[in-house]
Length: 199
View 1 (cartoon, rainbow, N blue to C red):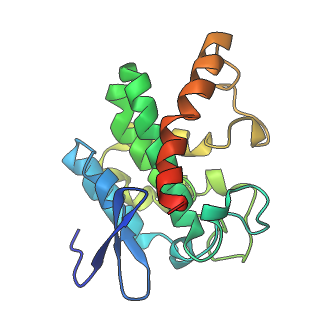
View 2: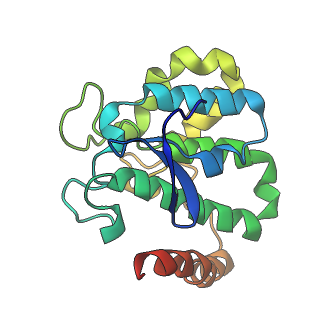
C-alpha cells in the first residue's frame, strides 16, 4: 500500500499512518507482522474499501462499553489498535497460535469496520459481526475461499457470549486459563496503555 503524503504517528507504541484529515489509512505495524503476501494484499485492499466512518467514529456510540481512550474522534481505530496490542501479548503466552497469527491479525483489524452497517445507519448495529463476510467477499479471491472463511468466522465470533445467539465455540476455557489470563492481561497490555495514556 502506498502511504503517499501521510505522516507517521506513534500510538500505543505502534505505528499508524495518518493523513492531514487525521484519517488513519493503515495499521502498518501489524500489517507488517502478517507473513503471507496474499493476506497483506487482502487486508490492505479491505481497508481501502472500509466505510469511511470507521476511521472517525468513537468505539461506542453511548460511551458505556469501551474505555475513555476509545471515545471521541478516531476512537474505533484506537480500540482496534488496543485489540492488536493485546493479541500480540497473547501470542507470547500461547505460542501454539503461531499458525493462526495472520488470520487473527486480519480479523482484529477488520472486526468493527462495519460497526454501523453499510450504508451508515449512524449507530452500532447488533449484527455488525456478520456484515464483513459479504462486504469483503469480492476480495476473497486474493487469499482463497478457505482462508477467507476462517477470517470471517473469527470476525463473526468476536463478541463471544455477548453476541445473540452465542456461538458454540465459547465456554471452552479452563479455570487455570482464566487465572493465567487475568494475571497476564493485568500486567503487560495495561502497562503499555498506562505508559501512553497517562503521559
